[in-house]
Length: 194
Picture 1 (tube, rainbow, N blue to C red):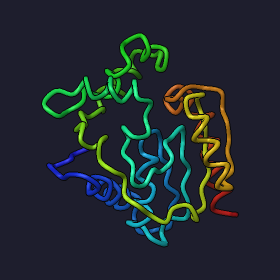
Picture 2: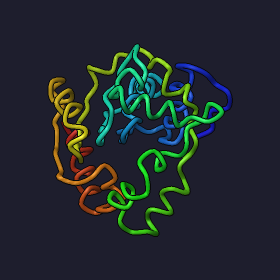
Picture 3: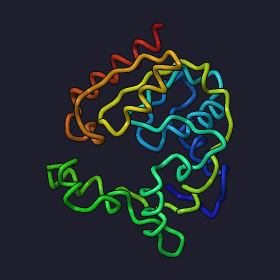
Picture 4: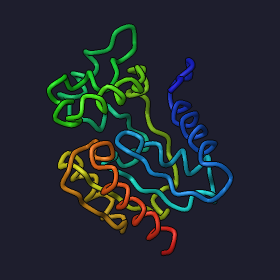
């Protein structure tokens, strides 16, 4: 993603505008994975009535007024800050090391293709406060893939969102695309019809 020197919450708005443009003019359901869940209020603002719902997949819940480092476990936040060089973080796969990535993505070709698309993100993005937004009344669903996102799944359930749980890994969309894709289609259809 090109951050183009934009700072603070404008990063959220810029990312949301790019997602809204990619989804086109028709009503859509956004599927947000991992840290992209924090973009939901900005996407809702950018799309207005065109956003028919959202499915968060092993994703952070929106955290208006707080930054990623505010929501992360303190040890992880400190480790991520220590990785920054010249204000940029290494690509995400390097946060965890080769062994962890091999467990998440056992196929070396898939792992290499995934790594090739990962950007270096400014540390300041993770320190920026997420914007406010009226996202809690929208139609949403949550797909939990890994135990690391159990609390987020509980938060989604507390909002009245349907929650599906698949015993898998954070990157299951790449390792089990048919199974996870079928689940996402079912969830999107439930949102669109309900």
